[in-house]
Image (cartoon, rainbow, N blue to C red; front, side, top):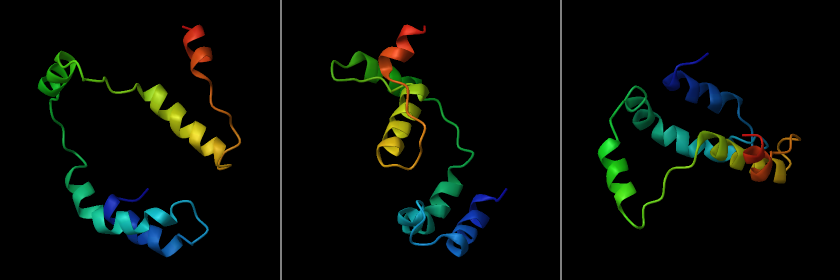
Length: 95
């Protein structure tokens, strides 16, 4: 496994135009220092969450499961993965 500063040069050396990560190379190269600086950052967002929840326009963050399902749905639609995402009704029916 690579450290983040070591990962970017490794990615540059291995990534080709046909790779799925290729469009992200410029972002990673330009952002590695900012991402590294925040790697171990921890903070309390309870004040933000309280203000968001008190607002009539506030919208709760999606669950991890909903987020991953959305990513999987996108990847399946683009032919990146062959695993079909579970539909929302199937997820909630099992609870």
